[in-house]
Image (cartoon, helix red, strand yellow):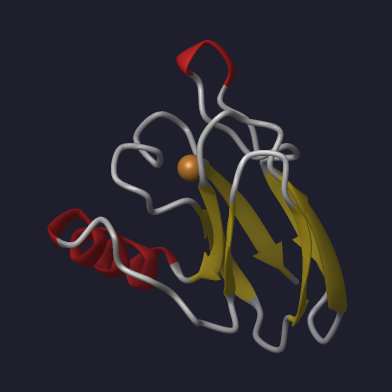
Length: 107
Ligand SMILES: [Cu+2]
Protein backbone atom coordinates (compact mmCIF):
# COMPACT_ATOMS: atom_id res chain seq x y z
CA UNK A 1 0.00 0.00 0.00
CA UNK A 2 1.58 3.25 -1.12
CA UNK A 3 0.69 6.88 -1.73
CA UNK A 4 3.73 8.39 -3.35
CA UNK A 5 3.30 11.46 -5.58
CA UNK A 6 -0.47 11.53 -5.20
CA UNK A 7 -0.88 8.04 -6.60
CA UNK A 8 -2.41 5.53 -4.23
CA UNK A 9 -1.82 1.92 -5.08
CA UNK A 10 -1.61 -1.70 -4.12
CA UNK A 11 1.42 -3.54 -5.41
CA UNK A 12 0.80 -5.92 -7.07
CA UNK A 13 -2.45 -4.53 -8.42
CA UNK A 14 -3.67 -7.76 -9.98
CA UNK A 15 -3.49 -11.34 -8.78
CA UNK A 16 -4.82 -14.64 -10.00
CA UNK A 17 -5.64 -17.51 -7.68
CA UNK A 18 -7.10 -20.98 -8.08
CA UNK A 19 -10.56 -21.72 -6.74
CA UNK A 20 -10.22 -23.25 -3.28
CA UNK A 21 -6.79 -21.74 -2.75
CA UNK A 22 -5.96 -20.11 0.57
CA UNK A 23 -3.81 -17.01 0.36
CA UNK A 24 -1.90 -15.32 3.14
CA UNK A 25 -1.71 -11.64 2.24
CA UNK A 26 1.14 -9.86 3.98
CA UNK A 27 0.06 -6.22 4.05
CA UNK A 28 2.48 -3.38 4.53
CA UNK A 29 1.52 0.26 4.49
CA UNK A 30 4.59 2.07 3.17
CA UNK A 31 2.58 5.25 2.65
CA UNK A 32 2.08 8.38 4.73
CA UNK A 33 -1.60 7.98 5.68
CA UNK A 34 -3.93 5.18 6.80
CA UNK A 35 -4.97 2.66 4.17
CA UNK A 36 -7.41 -0.22 3.97
CA UNK A 37 -7.35 -3.57 2.30
CA UNK A 38 -10.78 -4.98 1.61
CA UNK A 39 -11.47 -8.04 -0.51
CA UNK A 40 -14.97 -8.25 -1.91
CA UNK A 41 -17.04 -8.22 -5.06
CA UNK A 42 -16.90 -4.98 -7.05
CA UNK A 43 -20.61 -4.43 -6.25
CA UNK A 44 -20.11 -4.84 -2.50
CA UNK A 45 -17.07 -2.57 -2.52
CA UNK A 46 -19.02 0.11 -4.40
CA UNK A 47 -21.84 -0.02 -1.85
CA UNK A 48 -19.36 0.03 1.03
CA UNK A 49 -17.52 2.98 -0.51
CA UNK A 50 -20.75 5.00 -0.59
CA UNK A 51 -21.39 4.17 3.07
CA UNK A 52 -17.87 5.31 3.97
CA UNK A 53 -18.24 8.54 2.01
CA UNK A 54 -21.16 9.36 4.30
CA UNK A 55 -19.24 8.28 7.39
CA UNK A 56 -15.47 8.53 6.83
CA UNK A 57 -14.57 7.54 10.38
CA UNK A 58 -16.47 4.27 10.04
CA UNK A 59 -14.69 1.53 11.94
CA UNK A 60 -14.38 -1.94 10.53
CA UNK A 61 -14.28 -5.38 11.98
CA UNK A 62 -14.91 -7.31 8.79
CA UNK A 63 -12.97 -10.56 8.39
CA UNK A 64 -12.26 -9.57 4.77
CA UNK A 65 -10.59 -6.28 5.64
CA UNK A 66 -7.79 -4.56 7.51
CA UNK A 67 -6.92 -0.93 8.18
CA UNK A 68 -3.25 -0.05 8.55
CA UNK A 69 -1.56 3.04 9.90
CA UNK A 70 1.58 4.28 8.09
CA UNK A 71 4.46 1.86 8.66
CA UNK A 72 2.18 -0.90 9.91
CA UNK A 73 2.33 -4.50 8.71
CA UNK A 74 -0.31 -7.16 9.19
CA UNK A 75 -1.68 -10.29 7.58
CA UNK A 76 -4.99 -11.44 6.23
CA UNK A 77 -5.68 -15.06 5.35
CA UNK A 78 -8.45 -15.65 2.87
CA UNK A 79 -9.71 -18.76 1.09
CA UNK A 80 -11.17 -18.14 -2.34
CA UNK A 81 -14.09 -20.55 -2.58
CA UNK A 82 -15.92 -19.06 -5.57
CA UNK A 83 -14.65 -18.48 -9.09
CA UNK A 84 -15.01 -15.06 -10.67
CA UNK A 85 -13.72 -11.52 -10.56
CA UNK A 86 -13.20 -9.84 -7.21
CA UNK A 87 -11.55 -6.68 -6.04
CA UNK A 88 -9.11 -5.39 -3.48
CA UNK A 89 -9.98 -1.84 -2.49
CA UNK A 90 -9.12 0.93 -0.08
CA UNK A 91 -12.42 2.65 0.72
CA UNK A 92 -11.11 5.59 2.71
CA UNK A 93 -12.75 8.53 0.90
CA UNK A 94 -10.80 9.53 -2.22
CA UNK A 95 -8.29 6.69 -2.18
CA UNK A 96 -10.07 4.37 -4.58
CA UNK A 97 -10.36 7.21 -7.07
CA UNK A 98 -6.61 7.86 -6.80
CA UNK A 99 -5.93 4.29 -7.87
CA UNK A 100 -6.16 2.26 -4.70
CA UNK A 101 -7.76 -0.88 -6.09
CA UNK A 102 -6.69 -4.21 -7.48
CA UNK A 103 -8.18 -7.06 -9.44
CA UNK A 104 -8.45 -10.62 -8.11
CA UNK A 105 -9.32 -13.33 -10.58
CA UNK A 106 -10.34 -16.69 -9.17
CA UNK A 107 -10.27 -19.56 -11.66
CU1 LIG B 1 -5.95 4.14 1.03
